[in-house]
Image (tube, rainbow, N blue to C red; front, side):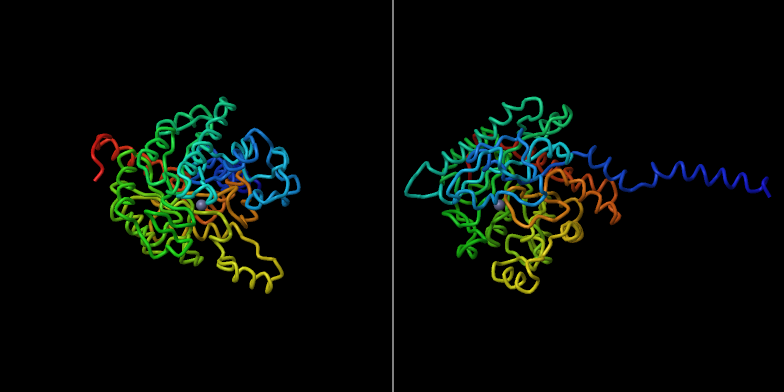
Length: 407
Ligand SMILES: [Zn+2]
C-alpha cells in the first residue's frame, strides 16, 4: 500500500502547494486591480478643497467608520469646521490604497454662483476651483500630476503618481460664451457636463421643469466646439431631450461621468436602456455612480425614501452587490466596452457599506471577479474604456483645425 499511496500523496501535496497562487481568486483580483489603470469619472472633494481648505495630504478618513461632516450641509452650518476636522471620502493616502490612477476632479459651479444678472460670477467660481485643484498638484508634486491627455494619464501612472484630471460640472459655467469654454479647456478641463441639476439658457436638465427641453442652436455649437477641442461631452444630469440632441450632434464619443442604470433604479439621473444602447452605438462610456439614490430603488425620490425609512426603521443599507448589479446591467445592455466608474465620492449620499471610501475601490473588482468577470473585462471597466473614449475624442479634435468656424 505505501508504494501505491506515496505518488498519490505527493501529487496531492503539489496540488495544495500550487493552489494558493493559482486558485486564490481574491489575491488575483487584488493584484489585477493594483496593476490596472483605474480611472474615476467624478469626485467632488474639490468643493471641500476650495471652500473649506481641505488638503488632499490631510487624513480625511473616518476613525469611527461612520460619522462625517455632511458635505451638502456645510455651506449652511453656523460655523466652519477646521479642514483637519473634515471627514471626506477622499484623500491622497486612500486614493493610493484604493489603487486609483486617475481622477476627474469636479469643477462644480453651485447654483448660488449662477445668476444671469451677475455676469462673470459663475466663471470666477469655476476659475477659482480649477486653481484650487491645480494648487494641490503644486503642493504634492511627488504624488500628483496634472493630466490633460491620455498620454499624460499614462505617464503619471508610470511615475506612480495620481493623474489629476479636471471636469467642469454644469454648462452654465461658460455663461453662454464659447471663449470661456476655450479658457477652461486651456486650463486643463477635459470634460464638461452639459447641465447640473437645473436647466439654463442652452440646455435642459433632468432636475427641474426644463426636463422637456433639449439643446438650443447655441447648445449644439457648444457640443461641436467641445468636439473640436477634444473635450469630452458629459451627458450626466442632462434632460432626456438634451441627451438625444447631444447624441445626434456630437462627432466624438460621449461620457456619462456619474450615472447608473434607470432600469434598476428609476432615477432620471440614470440612463434608460435605449440610452445605454445609444451610448454604445456612439462608442462612449457610462461611468456608474456609487450613490444609493442612483442604485437602490428604495432611495429614489424624497417621499419614497421617507416612506421606506418609516417602513424599515432607517435600515436601508446600500450594498456593493447593488452597484455590481448596475455594472453588469450596463455591461449586458450596452456591452462591456461601454461601462466605467463614476464614484461621485464626496458628492453623493448612501454609499455602499463595502465601498464608502475611495480606498475600498478594490472591493468592486473582487465582487465582479467573484461573478466571473475576466481580467480583460475588468481592465476595461476600471479605466480602459474611458481611456479609449478620451483617445478617440483627441483623434477627432486633431482632425479639425481649432480655428475652423463652428457651425
Ligand atoms: Zn453631479
